Image 1 (cartoon, rainbow, N blue to C red):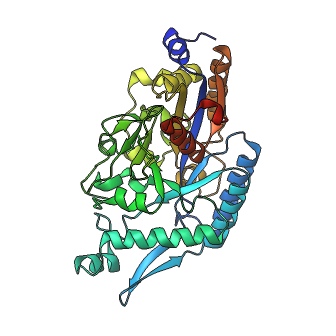
Image 2 (image 1 turned 90 degrees about the horizontal axis):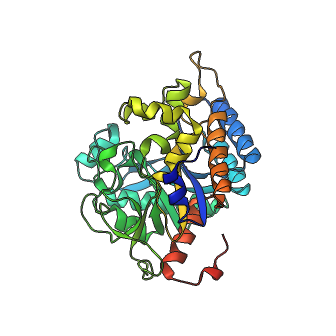
Image 3 (image 1 turned 30 degrees about the horizontal axis):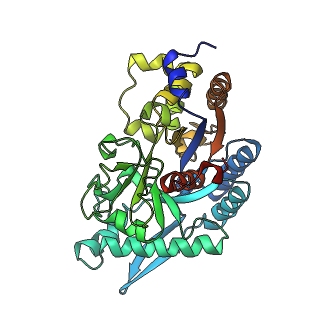
Length: 375
């Protein structure tokens, strides 16, 4: 294996490499029938059971908000019983069920329409109130279903538009404050498929929530003993891997397997110099390493995908096919090469979850003795 000198140099600064997959898990796609939803989730769950990867699934809850006679209500979709039964199974086998909030259809945005647009135009509700209600209802559902991550949790933001970073989809300028006081510790959105939403700095850093658009744009990098998280007010941005081309499994799958996915709407055209990297697992794995941050001798690689995206599971005839981005043969090959690189350079490798990463970040920030944490 011809490992590049830059890769070896970077890994010489590490004791371990952690691989984290944060999935935009959206089983609410209206293009699926109930039978298709069941078939897809059954297949995905079986793959997760058989895989060493236990992904962090940032769940887009199968429910909608509506407002009537001065009150908010949460309406569960027809897919709700099927989805939540599989979510519980996935949680029980070790998948980390976190939060994915798409609020652009019930807060001020360019796509809101129908009754919600009339309600918002008349000033009958505020975006902040609606978001608070949804968070409260989500906590109730997680408790009822026996899921963890109720009192403390992480988020992936719908459309990547955290804290009004894209006014077409989010105009809640104090969103981080709302999330933080309701138990959200960290955001795992970035880098974004909508690049203008991405922070100016990379890595893992703490920000103080402010009532202004994109208030997470800069922060203070977390390191051993920084104690930025001790008072419970700061918010963590977990943006460890900077190259969108290698973190988006949607994009990779679209290029290699010629499957059109929603990611195609956002990413820039793949340049000729990137083609070889996408096709060569060794180059790809090294790019993961070279574009990921090190925090306290721990290198964290984060990828994302929309694993239940309809284009990845339906063929042209509309039949369900198994084309999972996360559990594909090509992705397994890339992960195996990554593990081989770590073994060759005497660096520990392991799969991790968003919850574990949040715990590691808090432990490093606290400055506690390394003997007190077991990786």
